[in-house]
Amino acid sequence: MMTQPAYINRFVREPERKAITTISRTQAWKLEKQGLFPKRIKLGNRSVGWKLSELMEWIDNQPTAEA
Image 1 (cartoon, one colour):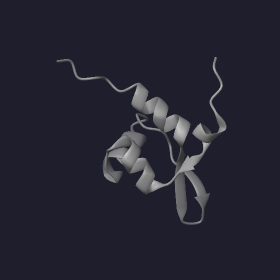
Image 2: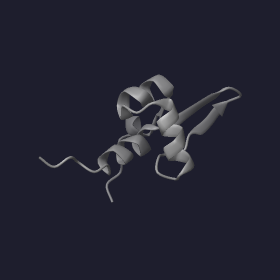
Image 3: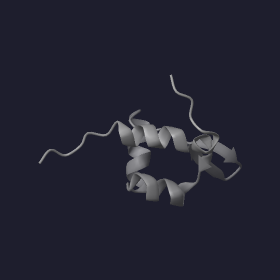
Image 4: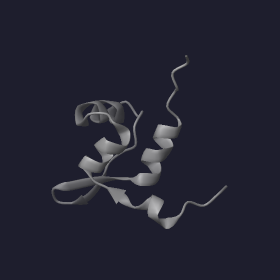
């Protein structure tokens, strides 16, 4: 197993998560509840984030459109 560079394991907040995954907050929440999207991590009383490495893995595992 290859280790990830340290910057891949940083936390991203909602605006960056949306830019990376291109799905809405509501869609991400629905997929998370179904176990199909990385779980958010509580960072503070009113803030959450996601591990960048988990988001990138989720993207890599999405089906691609066939021509």
